[in-house]
Length: 257
Length: 247
Image (tube, rainbow over all chains, first blue to last red):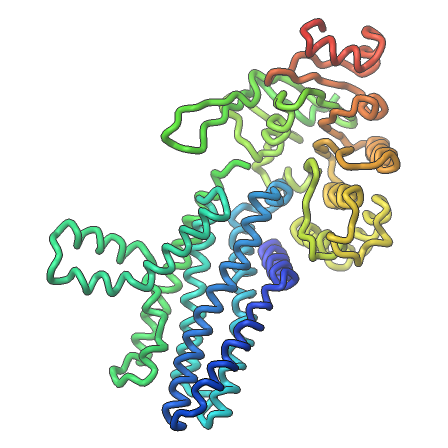
């Protein structure tokens, strides 16, 4: 456990020192500009738009933080060969990967907390409730989605040999993860058996990231915020993280440097 | 004499990274060698001779295609064995924004050095490699030679029984050569076993007990340094004679 914590702390510190926080400056400018742009709207619509925009921006910038943080790690491990020094130390390869995972999601969490505070502040200034339960739940699930993606990113890093290839694979999963449910609906009635089989395969293998996107359901009356639904989505997320990290550990264990 | 490294008929063949290609490259072939406790063993060879492959196989970073490799009576796959070894790669790199002390604290955490003795251990190591005044400096503020010394510091942080040094003089100035040599000799005096790769024959001559010459992926000869020099007049003549086919 201590070794996992040592790696997590190292990854977090390294990301922090590499100016990952600069993402937040762009986010703050982005949020301030948007707030000013919508100030002409009626108060009710204004609050709703700030919440919607805030959730969208948090999801996007959390993803950017993940990509930046992991890119630094993979670049140093593969191009600068820092991994060799660690792999000859008394640490299991699985411990290193899990430590890396926690370090990365801690970095994202730090940025996400600051972004959340900014969104809450703007919502409060516009006369809304900063502690709106649906908004807070949506942000938590947005983070859960990033945790799932981070586990996939770790898995992809064990099979990618260069940083560009890793980025391409991750972007592909990110886009597909948001589209997979729509693809399934699209082919439900019209497509042939072969197409359906391919879409089904993608649907069950690629993480369904749309599940964690509760933002667009903020004001729906469909009961999507019910505890049972949230519990199932949470369980799906945990399962996906565990399976992805287990697969990553198995592959990493056989890797040569 | 207690054997700390034992390699028997080990071969490493690299396969092409692309699975559709059937290319094979021989990294090392039929290597047999033993290294004994307390000795400084130098591995000499031209670029591409297979020295780094052999070192990586010993460290468990590469798996031999055939043959057996044992270190400290076990295998580098065992983390208990890895707790007793140190490794300095050629031109080590550390994250440039971290401080010297933070880098060592990270490795101390992995080694499981307890918090109450960690600070003292790090201070001692920094003093040994003459970086005590740079402990709060960021890695990017260090010269190439200082980064090499930081590499050496992380390699000896756990007081290893067996130390692997891959081109330890790389990037060092003449003073750095002397300081590194002094550290190696001090470790030897304390009964540590040191295995190192080097191109710099004059330094090998000053610290090694035995030398092996690797050429074309094979160990061509293993000899005590004194015999190699006595029979050939100098280490350079011994080395050139072997790589040119006249051992």
